[in-house]
Amino acid sequence: MGEILVFLEQREGQLKQSSFEAMGAGRRLAEKVGSTSGGLNAILIGNNIKNLAETVSRYGAQKVLLADHPSLQKYNNRLYTHILAREAQKRETIAVLFSATAMGRDMAPRLAARLGGPLLTECISLNIADGFLEATRLVYAGRLVATVKSTVSKFQVATLRPNIFTPAQPVSRGVLQYAPAEVEILDVSTVPTEPFTVLKDIIYTTGVGARCNVPLPDIAEARVVVAGGRGMGGAEYFKILEELADLLGGVVGASRAAVDAGWKPQDLQVGLTGKTIAPELYIACGISGSAQHLAGIITARHIVAINKDPEAPIFSVADLGLVGDLFEIVPELIKRLRTAGNRK
Ligand SMILES: Cc1cc2nc3c(=O)[nH]c(=O)nc-3n(C[C@H](O)[C@H](O)[C@H](O)COP(=O)(O)OP(=O)(O)OC[C@H]3O[C@@H](n4cnc5c(N)ncnc54)[C@H](O)[C@@H]3O)c2cc1C
Image (cartoon, rainbow, N blue to C red; front, side):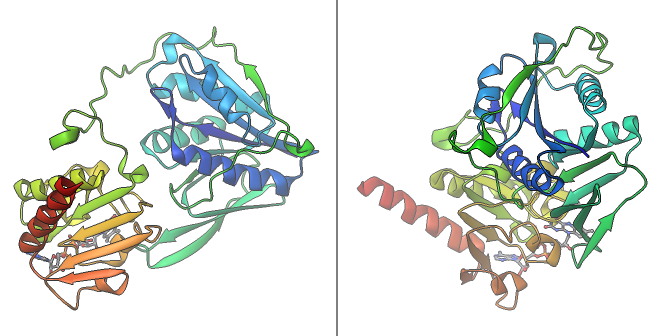
């Protein structure tokens, strides 16, 4: 019937957490398709990443396809898409899964266009029936959930919202069905030499205070997120949130209102058109809690809201609500955390 292929995203030799989620989704689809007629393959592209392929081989794929070459060190959509398209065609792949990260969102439409298949974006659940993907996605600013299915082509591409799907876990080597995957080294000698675009540099957002100049984790993978909204009143006032995040070992996020105002970059936006996050602790400061914002924090473990309006919708989802002025509450929290830290 065909195979499921999962693109595993790595940066600087580190696999993205969302790649394991895509693997988990791929594995469940492959089980539905039936292991005798198809299966799950994973593909890794980069430089000097053989060790990653070995790690991934324990996560339930039949094969890990490895394109490992110095020319693939930095992400390049032309080269990466070329390899993916070639492998997908060669293997009668029925579906390619990406995480809906910046890289996945860039590559998935290119691959779909190149191979003439439909693209299901930002899926929050995925199923397969009669060889066709069936996905659910949020529509109308997150107010409705639509089930979508395309039957125009047997080849399909999907992007999966991070922090929604259950990640794959390593499988026991003793389980016959899930023997460690074979790592297949791909031939990259025919990859186009002209990349069209060249990624010159990656500039990481860095921490403040004790973690000054340390690259911060992606907000989608952070353990603690302290986010600010319109109530912050300006870019310069985010400094107190950075201090708080720093003390808690977390990162700063923002509502769309704060991003639209130019106070924070879009990659820190939490919500429907931003990122879905799953931290242990989410602290929302001066954020009202619109449906679109809440769509990005449903997977947070504990939510603390600081807002001066006791009627703000954010309080309906908060585990702990602090009604008051954030410019009084946040400095007080920082003071107490510092005192507690000094006592240790
Ligand atoms: C298609 C679509 C997609 C969207 N996607 C997203 C998304 O991904 N993420 C997102 O966030 N939004 C998104 N939005 C926008 C969303 O509808 C809201 O407009 C936005 O979330 C509001 O941001 P906010 O809570 O920061 O601002 P507001 O709603 O203006 O809330 C500001 C809050 O700050 C409080 N406040 C003010 N001053 C203080 C103070 N000193 N101390 C304490 N509290 C204070 C106020 O009481 C208020 O509750 C989307 C909208 C659409 C239509």
